[in-house]
Length: 368
Image (cartoon, rainbow, N blue to C red):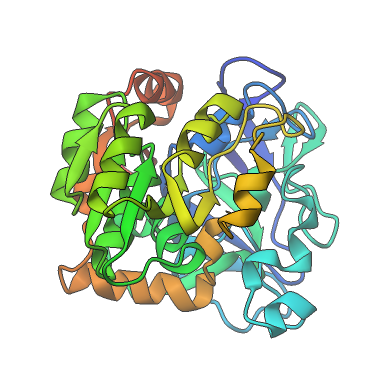
């Protein structure tokens, strides 16, 4: 079938084009996307990708249109959230409860599906969707392992944010920290991911949550999600964390900036106290770029921990339903995260607004 989607042919801006989409093969499903979140991870593709061309978008939700042979857990009409980290349920990582590290995720950077399929065609050339999803297209073919079925009562725009920003931020605090009741927590960067780290930290009982962001709009929004303090820079956060902790420094620091570099990471690290954990969630524009240079002696003698966090160390099949229930019960704010909706043709404007700090989370609205 034919569909439309936002594609990068190389470094630069997104181009909205007509695409050919293969029919779903064995173990695959075709999804009509309703919404796609404008995550900063896709913005990184504008600078570097493992493979061009590529269809953008990994944070989405929609409705299953068709299923291939052997698919038993999904059927047409099911509402699903895309999982940019497929989970087979059988590999070493899935068996250990760490499905975010599933072996099926080996090709998420190229967009090739686990069975080797390239689902899209552009002018006869094979291509895939970012993270095996391609939510910036109106329709996509995904592995059944990349779809999490949800109840139809949940709004699909809210559901789309469960594909990445909400679990990644929430889990960075709750799972990777892990934040405990009474902790002093610093969240550096309070955009689409960081604001959910604030929600997670506050939700599990942190005594103080310091939101750090140079954009006043984002700082003030973080206060509505549970931040007890908000400052513009880590330079301000360092003495504040020490004061609130009575001299030791933050127990957990979550680095959730859209772009990281040694200076940003160093500022986050200086907020950290003895026995504390620095959670690295943000990424750099270039995959092999060095983003961490730390004083190892201090890390050693203070028994500090540097913890990477992919998808907030969440399990999509366990945590998406759990987070949706928290939303339903009014204990997790999600509607408020969506600052603005864009049409597919406005994708570049959406990312410009993100760079300008004008949105918490922008979403592409495929359905009208």
